[in-house]
Length: 326
Image 1 (tube, helix red, strand yellow):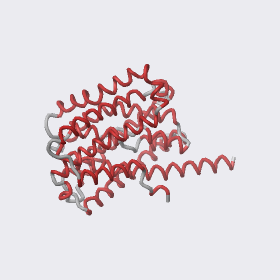
Image 2 (cartoon, one colour):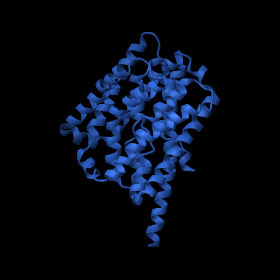
Image 3 (cartoon, one colour):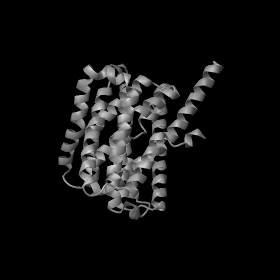
Image 4 (cartoon, helix red, strand yellow):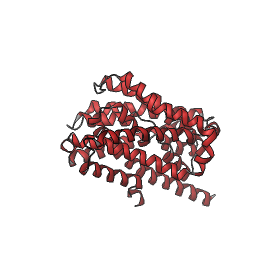
């Protein structure tokens, strides 16, 4: 039953949401928190760029069929699923919740956890590093474009979409590029202090979540989201993840991918990035609705970790049994 455990980051997120609920940023404290949040987002993406190893990406880049499908799953299949969910509209909840589901579906894949689960399950780690890193980088370009395209279609995109894409490029892409350029000087330090960098990433995300939920609490988020709505979000996230996993598994076997490649497709093609999604939402959407927009993403994040942990363990045990029998 280990797959049912909350991961430490999710516990921190819950504590942060509770803190924002009972002690939201108000008055003169708001500009200070917003300034810290902007700086934290820039640092987060600077470090993402500094961690990106061209050598590892090149090592796994030859599997073009695998990478093509993972990008298709991430940026085409998932957005279609999100649009179908909104079209179906099974439950009468706030439109911001449905917007949150669409937003969840257009985000890039995770990097660290996708690689970790691929390694644990015995998958193609080099290809996972290449695909997950490429997804994260492309997401800085593609996700804002999809937000503009998909959410304008559904009338859910606030403000000038292209102006907000410009903000994404300035606040996310520029620090990312600068971080990658700086890798030649700081790459060794980054590799030696990966645990410290991981804590910096988590702190940045938590700060953004606190800022978003502080504004959301002031604007009455918990009057819009009750226990029933939370339950429906959980069901919706489970449904999305299950369909995505099944599609990726069927495609991997239908097109004859090897077992290690199948594992890579499963974990890189069905996960969504909290690290990219929360900071990007902070730029794309009005502060008053960011908290409710990222709620499905935060819940999906925990569900995907629990499900993928269980799946990775199953693959690992099956691989060990196969090795013993042979």
